[in-house]
Amino acid sequence: MRDVDTDAVCELDDARPGDLLVIKSGGRKAFVQWQAAFAEVAPGLDVRRWGDPALDPSAITHALVWDPEPGALARLPSLRVIFGAGAGVDAIITDPELPLHIPLVRMGVDGAAQRMGEYVCWAALGLLRNQRRLALSQAAAKWDYFEPEFTAPERVVGIMGLGVMGTRSAVMLQGLGFPVIGWSRTEKSVPGVRSYVGDAGLDGFLAAADILVVLLPATEATRGLIAAPLLAKVKPGTGLVHAGRGTQLVVDDVVAALEAGQLGGAVIDVFEPEPLAADSPLWAHPKITVTPHCASLPSRRERAVYVADAMAAHRRGEELPNLYDHARGY
Image (cartoon, rainbow, N blue to C red; front, side, top):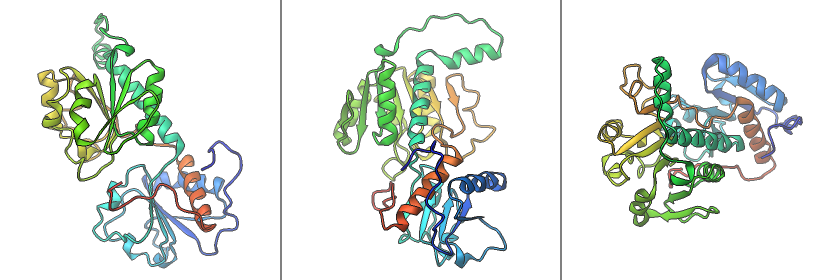
């Protein structure tokens, strides 16, 4: 994929006649931004809003979606490729009528990994320097002087999930002085990062981490993973950064671990369901920082470039990038 900062536009001026991309992500106001982005980077592409009553479903060849209605994609007879509007495709694959023979491309913008790395570094530093306590003190106009106990080289960050996001986060954390370890289902090699693998390596990984970062994909194996049995294996006072999937988090167990001191603090970006309910106890918890699923989302222009480039490459007979594997679950 090319750099999103280039002034060139994608080679879609010679788009196949009849190519039509329909978009369902962010609502009507967001569609205006999507439309402008594609007009800039792929001026030859016909872009329409999902649900447009004037649109013939049989004319749609590509779909860029976040949460399509169940069965809707299956009713598009000319559909060739489905693009997920985010890195996760959870709201797409839950469709019981999803046409599994249509390629499903996960968003893989380079800028997303950079943003995730920034978020993880910010969250780890926030836990290190007790930023939640500082925020509450400022809100209360309270001068609450305290001295942080540790520096980055004294706290080991353990990353669950060493894919593109986890790898970039590991590199950036090391730049701040944090020692980094990683856990994944299969062996991964990241410079300077000790790798723990599979079920056999999980307990050792959890026991070694002072800050636990969760960047795992949504699979049946990871559903409900961040719960009491796993949290009982971490060091007392461990910090939690959760930016994987909302389905992985058992909220009551996390709150209980915080109350008991098994967790020292938490920064949480993903929830199930979303948005987080206004009456959720997480909002006001003194040891939890809530962020609105914003850890790694690229700009719409960056995502438009990614989609346009993938469409052009596919038209040339090249493989689509970042394909979702229904058998693996990611």
